[in-house]
Length: 64
Image: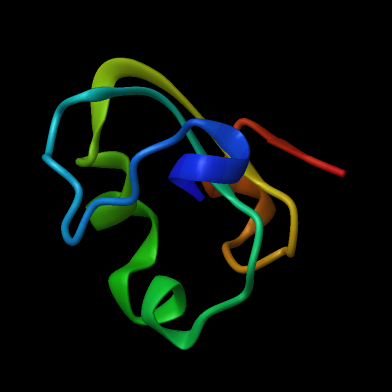
């Protein structure tokens, strides 16, 4: 990813650090985490966008 896109892959996300969280793949880990734990990864006003309908509609800020 670094060479092709110029991005760094991390082992574990740092809670409270992100402006936006995008669920682009329906990994079972996201379902197990639930919206509350996923939102905790973002800043207080972070946007949670669920591309794959992993979470209930009323728990996210947007979907495709």
